Length: 634
Ligand code: PRX
Image (cartoon, rainbow, N blue to C red; front, side):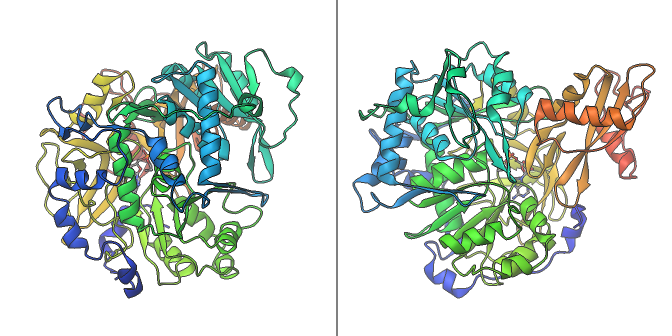
């Protein structure tokens, strides 16, 4: 695979939808739907009527305090009510809502009614712990039903959840808990990963030494990893004990459409992670509508999003989107190639998955094992495939299309971000596809590619990807950092547009091609990692004085980290130190930070004001022209 996006310039293949799909699709005419979406307020208002509101909105969109936009002004609604309660008086009452399975082949099924009971218990229990509307609950849990139940329990009572990806480690957990001032942390005795159990409780215990706001720790017994109950400290309680005797139904909190729903941290180019804040009404409308439009959800679908709940993909399209549409969502805990590289295909066959939404890095990983494994299983239940997280290279697209989709079913390449909350650029199942392009902005969304002055660039030319009109599931701010919100997204390009941080180009058919990040954010296996976070992890090691890191292309992960290190006087970067540094960074950041080559240097390229010019390191690495070096200090 080549990460060089110039190969995409030559990509001319066009894949038209199969006529069966067009016959079945809710939306049969892409162009007509795009046309309808041009009246943004009308489009989203129509979609908002699918939910039960306690009170409808007075105004669809309020732009008076831009970029602090408001959607469905004065509308009153509850997400949990619409995702769970709404279904229990319908014929979906006994339909499976959550189908959990793991690499050991264990399985838990919860119907909508059972989910309703569990969520009520959890919500009451949280209230008994003193959690009120507006409080934050942190969750450091594996992909397990308790995580979904707890998130819904929060939204039921108006508490915000802040889920921390279980692949992050002590440093990341501390930072996220402290920034969100969470009072309760939910964690577990472990998570399964390739036959091993990763002890999350141990990591949480270390983190909690530095987290003064946490009053209660709720422990999920998930793997049976031995933890003696007698060893639980005064503020620790087992999940099962917490819920014991909770039989009362817990009333749903009437939320304003603009009340905060959750915080989810993501990496930026500088400083600490950004707490992306999403609110209630617009998020629901945006997420449910895009899932419906892009994946054409029908009764009887079995939806499988392989993304982790700890990232936005899991929030929007593993939990909230599918439940808001009343479909069945499959939750899988484990790796794609364990116990063998047929693990995923076995699940598709066993349960009859109809829609599969995954990431390029997983596809590239599975591609390595050749065509054999998908052929061993019956994949005929699949109707639509999807991809998210980074550009999907045409080779991976073709492999997925041929071997999994059997050249019959389309791949929905969806471009979006933690901040956008919902799909922004994506095809509909009836759209003609070009491998490697997420096609065009969705109906109801206006995007463009512009130069630094905000002027549209001509077709074929690269520029900054921007969003020109507000959209319902947009972030409302960065948690307690309103200025940073304005500066990062809205003040970079003139014209009051949202700058996504990606470079892109538009071809002569209006298809958008994403070229990668324009900032110092890395994409490792689809995970977003800030270079500055990795650098601070390095310099917290006693022998590292200064560090600069850049992303280097990797055939499977997309990118891995190349590090340039200045060490303390008299120290050499030998094998032992490299190993120690690897352990150290992993301890701080978790396995998400995949370290490649490390080199020792005496000096780093800096601006006169002392900022590291990673651009220079990248250019040097790729053997390219160094570009403008006038601000270089030396
Ligand atoms: O660079 C884009 C890339 O992922 C970034 C957003 O990362 P994150 O907030 O972690 O959310 C990932 C899951 C929604 C974007 O700025 N990205 C995401 N999807 C695509 C993509 N790049 C190309 N094609 C995509 N389909």
